[in-house]
Length: 183
Image (cartoon, rainbow, N blue to C red; front, side, top):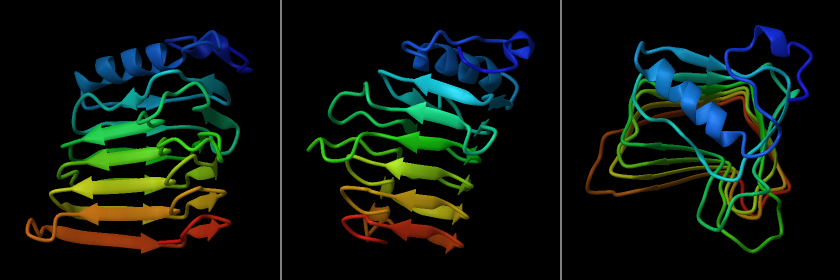
């Protein structure tokens, strides 16, 4: 709603429940293995942004593209992917308010998320982990060039089933500061 370039957008958020428009855009993009580009501005969400399919890209314009997860409930996360592959999240700023005592990760991936990339993400606070990956495996995962601050939990956390195998994780060029744990 506060973008300088609203006229060029296919979807315009109003600053309240912006997850509705972002999730709708991802659903349409999933029909063509496409991408959703968020302009600069603040996106206030009250429900998670959920990738509906594989082969999707969600990207912003860097630090000025801010997804504010202050409206999320306990056990809801800013961005969530479950059992998908070939997805990318890049050049966004995310937060869930630190110190709230709830489990709200900024990026949460579960159950054999494969061949995905998280890059150029700025997390300025998280009520739990900044980036959390768990489940059956994580082949071809790249987390690079992220700036992660003020997480109540870990900056980047993996909780993978050791019996599942299928791990190939590359973590490079990340900065994690003032978190409950680093990696």
